Length: 385
Ligand code: GLV
Ligand code: MN
Ligand code: MN
Ligand code: MN
Image (cartoon, rainbow, N blue to C red; front, side, top):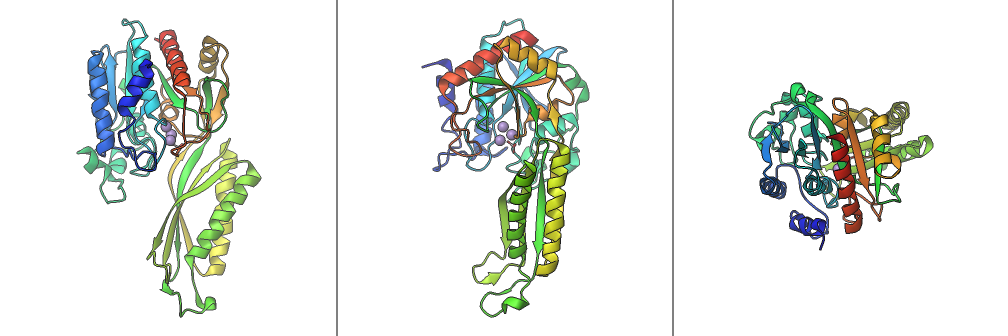
């Protein structure tokens, strides 16, 4: 077995559900077990582990936050029933790449907190806190589905921005499984992340009896919601963007009651900000008109919106050349690398995903391609440190 297979098998059972996917929400038991594993791996390599008071963990070869350190890593948390590679591959690869980099190099490994926003709703929460993209009070008040706040889960109000520390980093490199049928070679380099965001849509109507309320007397928010899902899909197809409604809550959620409230989350992404704005504005306008006809109302709350990220072009070209002219490609997925790139020269390496599927148990990468990713990451860390 390769180094990769051995190490991968250590974490593969942690948080695995019967679906074959993972339930590794930030700061819950499986993710805390993965953090323990991180500490063990760091100790085996004489790397000092620190946390930044924001839920992010770091393993240091050299002094913590020493000027010139090259940081790599990713996240442990998953979406509900997500794949095992999205996130953890970047951390496992980081430890194995570190083993192949000269001991004199100042490198560090990060495990960022709540990258998926799967528990508290805002993606890249840990890296946003570290870089000051979200205020500690605001982040601390975010609640999970059981009403537990991020501050409660963390045991404190997060510490927030640490610009002097981030300013000392020479570079950040995140290795990640590719997520969209876009990479045909074992390894590629990222060029950009599409602008994207999450909008909560509250459709309010009038709850009533399913059997006795005349069809003409109804104010059914489910109808407006259904229209919104179709409108988002149509608008995305027309503009070449991506729109998804993957989460919905209904009140009172009874078969024989007209709902009083439907809450759905729109995830929208596009190659450029103009297209994304056009998509969201178009959906809101059409759905508001429709709500007028349904006798319902729509309230839209942006929960997180992330601008387009263009990774350092010269750095991407340098690394792609260093790795044998591998492809340079954009992605529609969000990453901590996108958040850090506003503060540190940042690059991403992608590892091929033969299924092309992600945020699903079907996500995959072969051990051979993961090995190629580790080799590439080691080469990149050598090149940059
Ligand atoms: C996170 O992976 C996202 O892009 O939603
Ligand atoms: Mn993800
Ligand atoms: Mn990820
Ligand atoms: Mn992501």
